[in-house]
Length: 418
Ligand SMILES: *Cc1c(COP(=O)(O)O)cnc(C)c1O
Image (cartoon, rainbow, N blue to C red; front, side, top):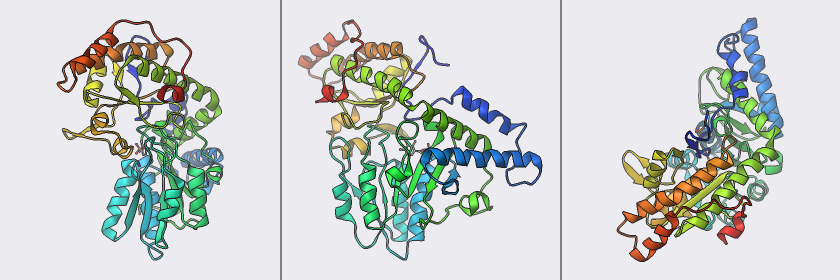
């Protein structure tokens, strides 16, 4: 698929390629066993069994019971259903929701949308590493608080939040707790009892499964209302014909991810650390963003002074390196990242953000090529920037000189960013 001379894909936080074993597991459910799981003949019963087995396989990884698993169309739907479902079910009890400033838009925009129905949201700040302080959660709870939603790991900077600590506070106050675990799926512990969560969202395409399918875990006993009306699928909790191939593919991808978890994480983390070490060593005026140690094993995110994130992406694209930036180009306008702004990064650093996320398909050779190609790409962009003073320009010019790749030993992230 992607080889040493071809493009280098370093945007696994955006989506991941589907593993061949997953494609193979899905294939029968598009043709030989394409029955509607709700029909009654044998052909359909095969599909029903596949969906039920997938539910059991996923529940096992989450430490949940199969009826607590609801299949959805992905992370966005799961987050929306969790937040709106609890908000409307507990409306008589209160109207206050607590979340954070660094959530994915699937959470932020769902909370904003609820404001028209007189719900109110507190968006908690984070520290400079993107960490939520559990104490701040405790401080903003009122008797009107009906839901707390804090993401497990951040999609832009990779910071891992103290979910178990926050859920303990939520439980003491008897407030349902939702976590957007989409970025954690496939790399972190998803056991809902160790995490202490009542609702949890996952998306298959972030862990080498197919796009358009996800999970909403709802702990039994949680007051929650379905957000989609129609047929009786998913025990009346999510109407619509089940995506049988997607559901089977998701279960297979999740199983594969957790079967080989330590080896997979070691692989992506070694590549990440090599990337972070190389970039910080060879590019001046650059910072690691997110937490130095409490971060996803595959996330390397940076902010560069005197350069625009969008330009870096274009510069990398022509070199066959695929990455992303916190500043996403939405309908022609460069929207600064709400996450990096919440971390308190200066506006010029927010504009110069770059996220590189490693995956199972990446190799050391690819990382070394990126570490070689990024410094001249950044230097060339800075040379064109009026904000870039000549004194610093000579430093950047030096960085473009061909230098050997960093040693194989991977410096720890903590030491690097200290
Ligand atoms: C990707 C992502 C989502 C959205 O998931 P989709 O399946 O693409 O809708 C939600 N939250 C986080 C943290 C994500 O990274």
